[in-house]
Length: 453
Ligand SMILES: Cc1cc2nc3c(=O)[nH]c(=O)nc-3n(C[C@H](O)[C@H](O)[C@H](O)COP(=O)(O)OP(=O)(O)OC[C@H]3O[C@@H](n4cnc5c(N)ncnc54)[C@H](O)[C@@H]3O)c2cc1C
Image (tube, rainbow, N blue to C red):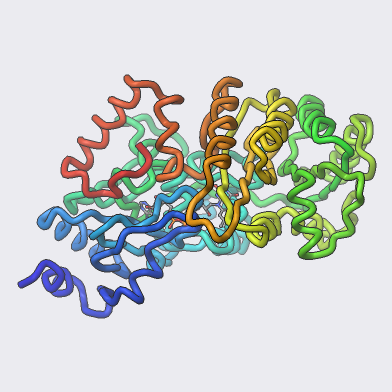
């Protein structure tokens, strides 16, 4: 019996895809990285399927690349040569939703926005909302510790993860964490698996925290500025004034131009940046008015305040168009640096300087309230990978970020894309510890090899 026929026998034939024309479509995430050719793709529909795959992979020493929806921007789900891509998007059950405990127990393939919608039927919400929330999965969000627009108020995915069911590299199953409000027993393995990018185990279920949904519709403001620095300064002033925005996003001129060329939003010639803020507090309209005043005081040339839920959504829709608008300009190297919030005005200007110095088109959006910047380096579509000046510009952005006390990745993960800079941030001792932890969970090195660490 060949290894593949053993895998088919352990599952069922329709769950194991081997036609290269089909497996190729599961080999990439949203990066430009050229994947290896998978040996097979497994469409898992239960924890037992995942157990069978990992036990088989251990027996045959075959690498396994876990995959949610493949919306990752770091190369984490990129297939490695001869691997099995373990696709989890069919595991979509919400096993439990408890209003009394304010938790849900979900399978990894649940789409992020679907969980939020299910929670809202009970007056609750699932807070983490990456811009990709209509297409990404909870498993992928957990594995990358995804952020999102609401993190400025509600925290990142890890802040909502209470416990996990994980299939280890050899097929054993463990349950980490808890479903209680508090808990100290043992090391925080839940925290360890969150953000581990599929290198330590395969998440097959998660107990996540839900929160009371705001009682009122949020109020949104959109402020236009003649300078990036003014827009960034407004963010600091809004936070310092105690406004507690539930969303605080910033778009630079290049991003706005890309959106305007595509969707004609009426961009003014003098506009260099836009800030979009939101308050979901009970006195949201008053807080939004205060944020608008602060923007005007710090140099905004125009401020719109929503007067209806529909208008509030329309203002945010501009932000959600950013990624697709930039993809229309060329191939995108999407970066994800995060600096202390106070360094935001400096960093955003520095990125503009770096763009000029290296002659690269960089369009930046920022989860500004978190100091998390996404400089997107656009390059010619005919090239298979970024030309040297783009890598040099990215290198300059990373080094400046670290110099400011920041981090290489705020929410997308290291994947394959940022491994070459990792040592700059972690240093040799931490790196050694990471490899030690990996060896405990995955002694044969079959789980998503070559990623994250
Ligand atoms: C338009 C757009 C907007 C985006 N906006 C944001 C944003 O605002 N914030 C943000 O954080 N990200 C954002 N992203 C990036 C991406 O959506 C997130 O990283 C998301 O968490 C990936 O989820 P996924 O299901 O697509 O995972 P995949 O891309 O399939 O996988 C991501 C990583 O998780 C691992 N993995 C997946 N499932 C499991 C599992 N069950 N167990 C173990 N490991 C697993 C994979 O091996 C891989 O390393 C955006 C992407 C796009 C295309």
